[in-house]
Length: 188
Image 1 (tube, one colour):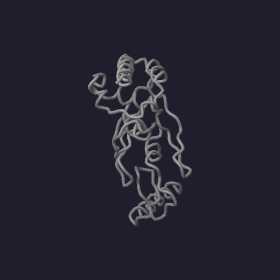
Image 2 (cartoon, one colour):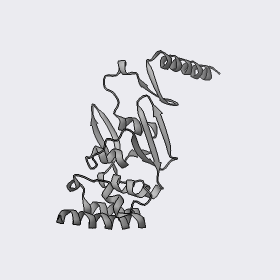
Image 3 (tube, one colour):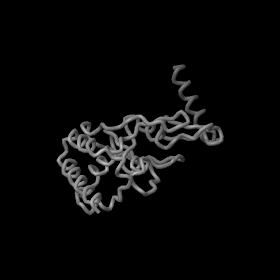
Image 4 (cartoon, one colour):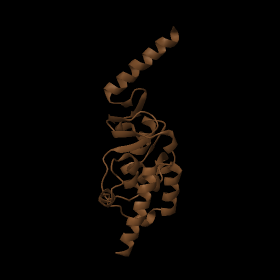
């Protein structure tokens, strides 16, 4: 019985700290120090990884991080094999997109500075994740609308290898179109 009383007391104390502004509740059971107590603010990618453990940052968030798209991306989008969801808290909005277990690969741990790290898709995998999860993304017009930049930073052979590893007919088809589109761009 004493153990449950301690948990109740702990819950009350956490509630008091949140109400007084000392802590920020990110989700049930997960807290961050409020800004005035932080030596270093948590990087949004780190927060995204902590909000949902089995996830990695991908899609537009990773593509922007690598400088492959020109747009600013206000929320952090991650891939998970768990259920999809959108979580919002005082630190931002975090979107989790579901993929089957066979597509949960192609990420690495990135040093974000200030002793912070996060799991982030490799550039090629971030592109494939986006194309896989976007309806009609195999349309050549959609590929042009992406406005990919710094394409020289993409390893096209590795992109093809990842598409093959995915065993997704859609990704194999899209990869062929991307390679053809990039050749056309190089010619012009």
